[in-house]
Length: 115
Length: 111
Image (cartoon, rainbow over all chains, first blue to last red; front, side, top):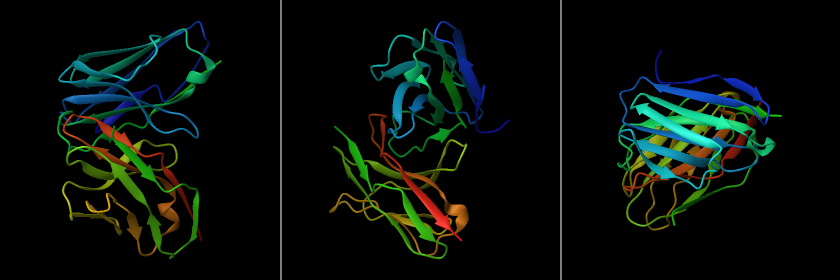
């Protein structure tokens, strides 16, 4: 595997389910990100981890819980979601989350549908 | 706070037409500027970037110049192809580690 991978690619869940999204980067980067992309809305940054430490939580509801066990893996644990949480969830990584010149490398996303 | 404003879409062009997608920004300090492209069913990927004033980023026939005096980073291509149909995002990055993205501009190129 190369680049940034995300699993699953598609997920349908009920409002009472608990599920997790997984992201893995094979680039040796130290920063990882979760974004939410909804139809007709701007890209929303949710969480940032730099060297495994959470450095940004952009007022995300507690029903979304991130976990970063090491610099290569990032999870987003989901529970008691609402239909408006249906969106494409994108994971990204960059070499160092504090350097302005570093571009981000994105995974293909997980398309989440909440029924 | 930092912000990016880019041209509203959607933009529809015929093949071989010229493309310009406007992008202006507001930031403290000296940000780096990026254009990302998102093809259907995929994540974003870097198209080009510029890290200081007057730098020109280029890739796949696309160009953008970092204009500090007008706080702009407009994306241009002289002759678009059907395969360029995608959503284009302008973004800035700062030393605080934050990236700010524009709303995205959808480009459709017709044969």
